Structure formats: structure tokens, C-alpha cells
Image (cartoon, rainbow, N blue to C red):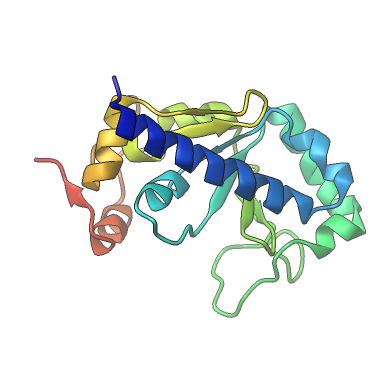
Length: 186
């Protein structure tokens, strides 16, 4: 159960997300909109928003593998959309699928910071490594889903492994969060 103040804070974050998603999607040609009807926004953006910190990535996961495949093909064939894809910066170490553009096997990153994950669909969220990364905003229902445990981890900046995540979490990923003021739960 959330207190009135906590619910107000959650509603405020939801409002920011709704506004930001409208802004991000409005930067793309309208032909892209159908791909996003049943997507979710999830990941570290929520922790940043609850702490009034800069959001590094706006990670969107599409509905399913069919939608991902169609989106990927569309981006590759639609010049106005491809123009909105971010350019590769010097020192970028991942293999890219389009010369000079941030199109990788994992994601398509747009100039405005929208990152569309193409490696997996929205069900992948259930297997995220840390609890604080799991809140999500559903574009179809316009609802923000956040559990008590997710909220508490975010507010305390506490790294708690998602019990459903079966892989080892990389030392690099843990150190990234610790350098940002997060701590491991004892």
C-alpha cells in the first residue's frame, strides 16, 4: 500500500513519462506510431525520475517479435525515420547494422534519446537483473505499474536482485550503479 504522498509522487512521475513519450514520439514520422501502440517504457528511467536526475535512456520495448521485425524493416527502408536515428559517435565499440547510425543487434537509438529495444520484446522486463529497473509504463493503457518493493528500492537507491533473474549480474553493471550512489542490500 502506498501513502497519499507516495501516490502523488507516482502520479507526478507518470505525468512526466506521458509528456516525455508524446514528445519523443512526435519527433518521429507519423508512420512509426502504430509500432508503439502496445509498447512499454521501462528500465532505469524511473529511478532517475524519482530522484530528479537526468534520464540517460528512454528504453521502449515493443509488443512481440513480429512487431520488432516489422519495426526494424520499416526503419531500414524509411529514409525519414532513418534520418532520426542517432549517429554513431567516436569510440563506439558495438557492431552497428547501418553505417554511421546507432542501429545494433540490441536497439535502435534515436537522436532524441528514445531507444527502441529490438533484441527482445516487452516480456523481457520480467527477467531484468534488478528490482528497481522493473517499473513500467504501458502505452496502451496509459498506466504506470510499480510495486512496493520496486518503489522502496528506488527511493533507497538499493540494488536488489530480481529473483526471476537467473544469470550472474556483471561486476561492471553493479559498479555503474554504485558510482551513481546506489548500494547493495546486505
